[in-house]
Image 1 (spheres, helix red, strand yellow):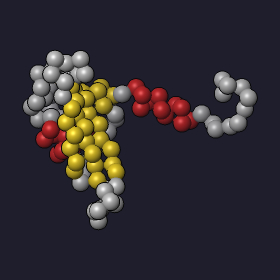
Image 2 (tube, rainbow, N blue to C red; image 1 turned 90 degrees about the horizontal axis):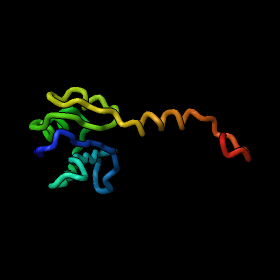
Image 3 (cartoon, rainbow, N blue to C red; image 1 turned 30 degrees about the vertical axis):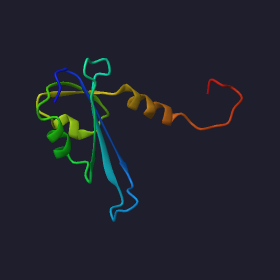
Image 4 (cartoon, one colour; image 1 turned 90 degrees about the vertical axis):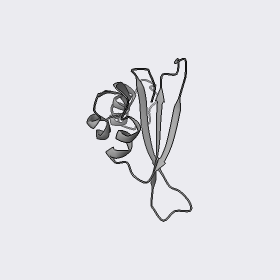
Length: 105
């Protein structure tokens, strides 16, 4: 798909108004933003199954910064590099939600 050895992937569910399905999936695949040929591919699918990412990334090898979604661990020749923003979010969500005048809490 591209010559760089780093790609990015993410997916999110959303509701299509004129659909009988409760949700569908919007997949986004990209190469490095500082690439000489930047590329972003968006793909709509009705599933979040492994087959979607395997099909899009079948010719790719290298590193894949992404969230911890398990489908990315099953890709041949690709090493998922988990996004620290997702890990940080879990710590932030664990902070008790209390009102205080101390801005450090």
